[in-house]
Image (cartoon, rainbow, N blue to C red; front, side, top):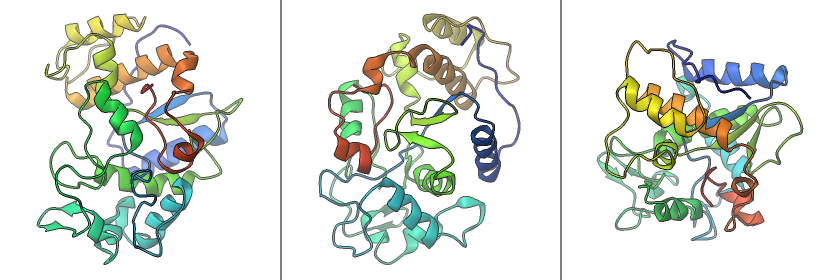
Length: 258
C-alpha cells in the first residue's frame, strides 16, 4: 500500500484513452481501487424505474449502460448527445434551453445514496440535470458508455462483487475526502501546496511532489487517491446500512457514504 503521495499522470487524456488504460489494468490483473467521479446510474427507487413510462426503460445498471451506448453508438468521443436527444429520453432531462416535461419541479430526482450524501452535508446534483458548472449528468452518461464497454473485464462495486484479484471501480464524490480530512463546508477548493499536504497527512500520506499547477482537478485527484488507499480496509464502507440488494443492482452507491 505504501505512504507516498499519489502522483498525477499529466497528459491530455481522452475518454478513449481512459477506456484503454482501464482495459490494460484489467488485462494485467493490477490490484487497484479506482474512483470514478460520476453517477453510474439514474434514480430508480423513487419511481420504480429509471424512465417511467418508456418501454425501453432498463431494469438494472448494466442494462442501462447498454441502452445509453447503443443509442449513442455513432456519437464521437464516447459522448451521449444522441441519447439525451432521443424523443423518449429527453423528456426526463433538464438541458440548456430544453427542460423535459417529466423532469420534476425543483432540483430533480435523486438516488438513495445521494440523499446519504446530503446527510454528510455534501451538495449532490440530480444526474438528470445537464445544466450548470456543477452538474454531473453529462460525465455520468459518457461514463455509462465506458462502463458498458468494460463489462465483463472490470467490475464496478456494488453492481459487482469485490474480486479476489485485479482492479475494481467505485463511485466517489471528490468533496467527501476533503471534508473527511477537515475542510469545512463552504471552504474553497485546494489550490496550494501547503493545504494539499496538510490534508494528505490526515490520510497517512507523505507530502506530494510539487505540481506545475494547483487546480481543482489535480488536487481532488491526488487527495481522493490518498483517501481511497486509506479507506479501502474499512469494512463499514463496503457494507453501508442503507445499501440494499435492489439498490446495488439498480442505482449503485457512493463509496464512503454509510
